[in-house]
Image (cartoon, one colour):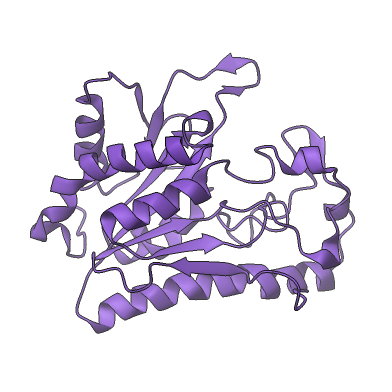
Amino acid sequence: MISTDDPPPFTIINPEGKAPVLVVGDHASNVMPKALGNLGLDQAALGQHIAYDIGTRKLVNHLSQHLDAPAVLAGYSRLVIDLNRSLEDESLMPEVSDETPIPGNQNMSVEHRNLRIHSFYTPYRKAIDGMLHGFRERGIVPAFIAIHSFTPQMAGFERPWHVGVLWDKDPRIPLPLMQNLRAHPDGYNIGDNEPYSGKHPADYTIDHHAEASGIPHVSIEIRQDLVDTEEGAERWATILDDALRDILADPELYQVWQSI
């Protein structure tokens, strides 16, 4: 399904990064493979949040350099296949997204669905697994950071948060991270499992690659208008780097979590 003129299903940036940290961006791209056209959508739709997490590619690029950490970025739009969902999730290849019909995802055959999984989903999962395996081979229990962005408004509701910190059972990164972000002199509104929850099964990448194996992790949601420019992305990469620095510098962090 990916032609020679199409980009790969994932990109690894800063692969030789020295930090014991892996950053991922599940929804970093709005690219469509030529074989699928635009799934029946116009270019305006592909520029909206239904197609990707606006600003996350820029943010991950900058944050990866600040942390000196490798990062894995999705190569295609989440409308092609949502890499932050399990294969059993009904929203994996949504027929409707935020009230917008997705014509190319309707009446899909089993064969076509499986081809999308094989072409886009499986390579991304394997890329993350490969990076984590590389840490394990070096005797490292890495930290895992997922980056997303959210719209300033949803369903007529003005979202007050600048950043959301999503987590479930393991508090090692999220709790001190929220404390550090709330202490920033600019007085940011930091959501604790807002506007989305790390306890929800839709947070699949964290659940599958990090929580299941007990490695320290967090999912960070940034309001998209804060990171939709290179300047904004660099500013927030600096803020996150400052907030994460002491947490990631603690050697006690890098061990498998044993919940009580």
